[in-house]
Length: 145
Length: 145
DNA sequence: ACCTCAATGAGAACGGGTATCATTATCGTC
DNA sequence: GACGATAATGATACCCGTTCTCATTGAGGT
Ligand SMILES: [Mn+2]
Ligand SMILES: [Mn+2]
Ligand SMILES: [Zn+2]
Ligand SMILES: [Zn+2]
Image (cartoon, rainbow over all chains, first blue to last red; front, top):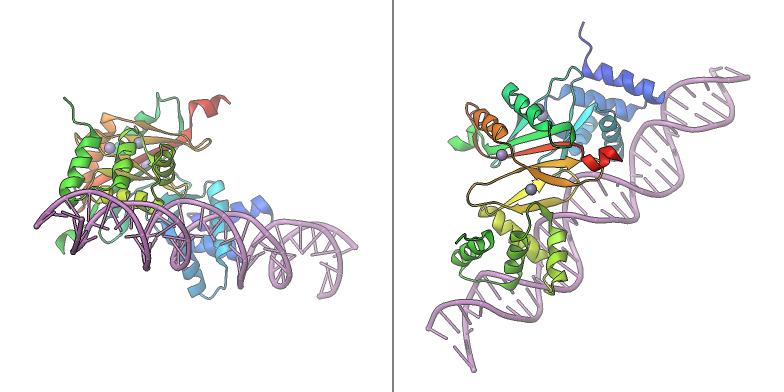
């Protein structure tokens, strides 16, 4: 059986603080259902829409905690709102295509790119811990229109 | 003789609107002196420090116009403030190393990385117009400390 | 010099994100 | 199962970068 990200994270948080509240659990469960990044607002709306009256502050607190534990990644596209997505414990990871026109965001993976990034990381004095890549342009739909 | 970015841009804006105000010119001149990205606040302070009483709104307006003309690039590191840097008309371009610890930002170039990005751009339905790459980690100074 | 209208700057307004604090709920203990 | 300590929560005030508004200024054409 494959342990889901959600289960993995709930267990981790449990062992971390000893407590388990409702708001954090709902945020984790929601994130676990997403395949790419979502904004705090979308998380808040999503959880509320399902019937849980959680507060925005709790959403941000949950995200902050998850970020510190390396369970979630902040994605900043430059539109003024941060987005968040789960980090696969198995190392799976993707980058983002952003449509300048309609704002759509979709994930992509590319091994050759990862290898090139790996090589850049060396020889710069820096100890690189993470990297972000965004490709911006016009998506298929917007090109057609 | 090499035409500077500043001259190139001033001429371009001139031909674009027919008018030339003081605020915009000061912003362009300031950006022309920078080798990497700076925040709107830094631009405002920099220009004011040199004796011109320009307003913040004018800084943002100038940056917006330059961005639309593709003369300036918005750099969003995710710290809540956008930065801007000139785009070399000759195509020269760099990406950024960001220290998670002290916040320092420095540019780097890597040809192999650019080629890998070029290859990714194809075959995705997208017409990629630009890309951003950030490497995050601990800089030399912070690693030593 | 005069007119027109883009450009400007001060300050109000906006919005995502954070801090505060009274209330609620979880968990260990009895 | 009730109780107490204290972490978690949620409403809301607040912060600050950015945008909007509007009265004023000034560049360029005549
Ligand atoms: Mn990668
Ligand atoms: Mn590049
Ligand atoms: Zn994603
Ligand atoms: Zn730069």
